[in-house]
Length: 112
Image 1 (cartoon, rainbow, N blue to C red):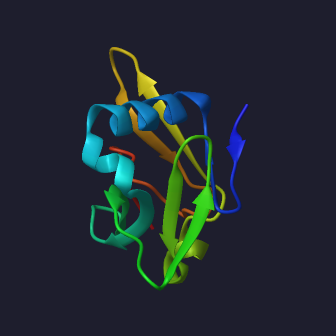
Image 2: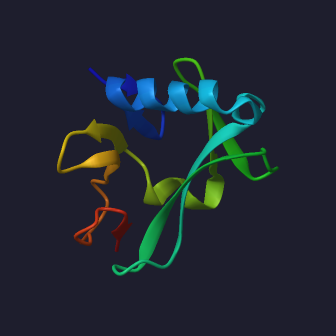
């Protein structure tokens, strides 16, 4: 089951890990989780996934125990993005499944 936002979907594993990051770093409790994109990476764009302050151009979504912000100019690039978290032996970390991506790189953090 995914927690639905208007822009991004988070799996239960991702939500648990985000809450853990907030709990383990007190300064994150006063910030928003920023999701977005920037130029770079081997496929053209890479994801922004960090705790940050809100800007005037940001959209805020209240999720299960935290708030996410997305710059309005980047919202269409991550619309319906699913964020998961894997903790297996071969994969550990946040996984981005973007239905808008035409191609992705092998590391999964870059797309076009």
